[in-house]
Image (tube, rainbow, N blue to C red; front, side):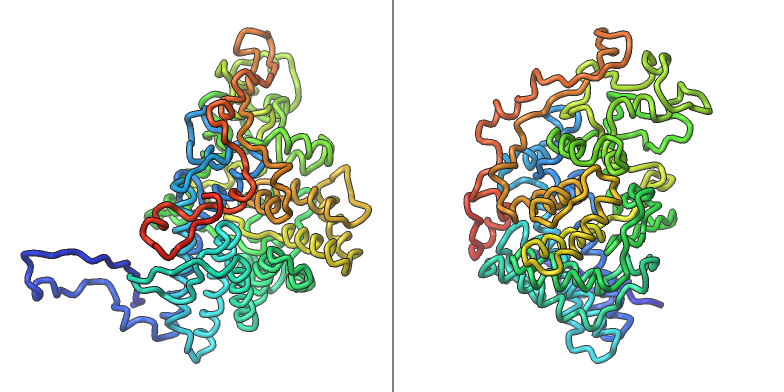
Length: 564
C-alpha cells in the first residue's frame, strides 16, 4: 500500500482540562515525518506534492482568478478589467487602475501562494539533498526548478523577497533579499544545479515533455531571469539552448488558435504547462482546476445572447471580466490587418459575433454571413440597453473557454500554459538586438512568428522596437506586457490604465435603430478618474507590488517596497 504524507502547519494552542495521555493518540492514515523521506518512492511522492503546490499558483481559485492571470494581466495596458459594472470585481479593477492598497486580496494571496510553493519544493530539497540514488538526485533537481519558477514571479513582482533556501521554523522571520539581482542570481543558480540531472524533451511531439520539468523549462527560466538582470549575452546563450535543442516548434498558422485550447495541449509549442486530466471519480477536481475561470473571462452572457446555435464553439456562460483595450485593438489592426489569422484568433468584432457565428434562430444548418433576418433578429446580440461595461466593441477570443475545454460538469480540462516557444523566440530576439550577436538568426525567428500570424508587417531588420511591437501583439493576455514595460523602462509613456471604461451597446435594443448597430458610449467612461484622482501608474512605486499588509504586520525584519 502506498504511503501518503500530508504536511501540516502547526500552531500553538493553549489547552486546558486535558491530560497529556489523553492527547497522545496516534493519528490514523498519516505517516509521520520521521518515517517518510527515505526511499525513492517517498522522494517521488514528495515531488508530486511540490508540483501540486506550484500548480496552485496557476489553477487554484483566487477570488475568481488564478494568480498569474490576476497579477500580470490586469496591470497591463492591453486589457480592460470589466465585469458587470463599476462596482463589480473591485480587487481586479484596483490592479487595472493602479489604485490598489497593500491589502489588495489578489496581491496578498499571490505572494502567499508563491511562498507556499517554495516551501513544498524546500521540503523535497532539504530531505533528499544528500540522496545517493539517481531518482533522489533527479527529484531534488526538479524541485529546484519548481522553486526557481516561483522565485521568478517573486523577483519580478516584489523585487527583494526573502531568499528561503530551506524549510523555516515557525519562529523564523526572514528579511528582504539584498537586491533583486540577488534573487535573480538565486534562480539562475537553481537552474544551473538542476540542468545536468533533468530530462530533455524527447521531441516536439512528446506531450509528456511539456508536462514536467525539463532542460527546456530550466533554460527558459534561466534565460528570463538573466534577461531581467540585463545580462543579454547570458540570457541569449540560455535561450539558444532551447532553440537549438530542436524539441520545440511553432504551431502552423491554421492551428494558431489551438495553443489556448484542449486541441493544443502538449503541442510542440509548449515549453511547460499544467496537465489537467479529468476523472469523474476524483472529488474536488472542479475546485482544483480554476473553478471560475471558464466564466470570469468569457463574454458577459447575462446581458447578451452569445452564439448558441448548432456547431458553436462557445461555452454559453461568462462574466465579461477581460476585454481588449482600444490601444491593443488599434495596434493589432494597424500591424496585422483585419484579415490576418492572428487578428481573427485573438479578437472578434461585433459583426463577426452577429453574422459569422451560429445562433439557435439560424436553424440546424446555419449559413454564415450577413442577412436581413440576422440584422433585425433580437435573439442575438447585446440586449441590455446600457450595453457591455468596459468594452470598446471588440471581443476577446484568444483565451475564451470553449466547449472543447470543459468536462461534463463544466470543470476545466484545458491545460494551463506557463511558457510557450513563441515567448522564448521573442526573448532571444530581444537579446540579439541588444548584443548584436546572431542578428540574422534572430530576425529569421522573429519573422517566423510574424509569418505564422499572417501579419501585414514583417520586420526587415532586427531592432529593439521591432521586438517590442511583436511581443505586445503575440503575447497578449499571457502575463508579459506589464513585466516588459517595467523592464524596458517604458511605463511612464504607456501605462495610462484606469482612465476609461466605456460601454458598448446595440442601438437595436434601445429603439434607436431597426437593425443591429453597435456604438461605444463614453458618457460615463471617466467615472474612475473622477472618483480616484490619484489613479494611474506612478514611477518609483508601481514597478513593484507592495509586500502584503499581513506580512509587514507580523515580520518586523521586512522592509516595504519604495512608495508604499
